[in-house]
Each structure stands twice: as structure tokens, then as C-alpha cells.
Amino acid sequence: MVEGWQQDKQTPNSSTNPRRIHPCDRSALSAQIAEIESELVDILHQVSPETPEAVDWSKTITCLQTIPGIGLLTALWIVVSTLNFTLCQSAEQAAAYAGLAPIPRQSGTSVNKRPCIGHTGNARLRTALYLATLSGTQYNPTLKTFYERLLAKGKPKKVVRCAAARKLLHLAWAVGTKQEAYMASCPPTAA
Image 1: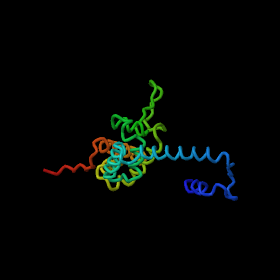
Image 2: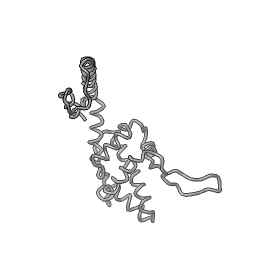
Image 3: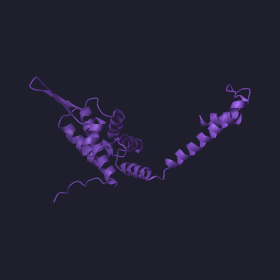
Image 4: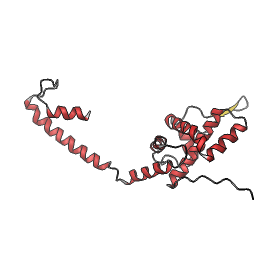
């Protein structure tokens, strides 16, 4: 788009250019283009990566990538979707925002079904976390023990993966709000 705009800017009177400009309008349009270009430069200076918010976001993304199972794209989805965890005051709120919190389905004594995650929440964030759980349960020792424990209890695989995605979001929230690198908890040693 920018290259096409620059090419049109260089050849306004070209016979191949379908947008011919009348000479009377050229000066008015040139003034408008100059004004828009100056506004664009001002906007680019306002959103430069040196702003404090951009530095905080990049530090959060770097810290999130220290969690095994969370790569660059998942870290970006988490930070952008939660506005660097400013939308969520707690890990439980983050899980509810992503749609990973179990929703009970009961009404009095007649309806009493198992809780499920439903279709509420941010679907793209939920998907990114679910996919990150696929590798996280293999390489993250915290998630791996959690995943295997739930499978041993006889839970269905998809239910266990959603629970692991919720756990992964809890870990991400803790790392993101503290701005510290992830350190896996050491398993207790036999005394």
C-alpha cells in the first residue's frame, strides 16, 4: 500500500494513472498530503518503542517466554489480549476472561450437570493457551505432573488439556505481574 502511494506520488500525470488530478486541485491536495504526512510523523513519534508502556510489554513478553510451552506468539496473544494483565486483577479473573473457568450448570434440583468451560471469553486467547499446553505438558515439569495426575484420575484428555491451559494461564499471570523469569518449583526430595 505504501509503495503504491509513493509510486502515485511520483507520477501523478502518468497516462497509466487512472486517478488524474486537475491542475487547479493539485495545490490543495498537495497541502492536504503534507499535513497528513506531518500528522503521521507525529503519531509515529507517539507510539515509538521507547514509551514506558512498550518497555513494560516487551519485558512481560520476554518473561513469559521463560515458561516452557509459551513461545513468542502465545506470549504476544496473552499480553495483547489482557492489555499486559491490566484487565485482570487476579489469575482467576484472567482465566474467566479467557473462558477457561469452569461454569456450573445447575438450577435447583432438576438440572445438575457437570461444569464445563462453555463458549464465553476470548476464544483466540483460549486457543493459543490450549495449543501451548500441547507442548507445555511435555516440557514443563509443573504442567507435566499436573497433566499426568489428572489423566491418572480418569479425566478425559480434552478436559485435562483445558485444565492445564488454565494452569498455564495462572503461571503466566504470576510471571507477567511480577515481571520475573519463570523458575520451576523443585520437586520435594526424600528425607
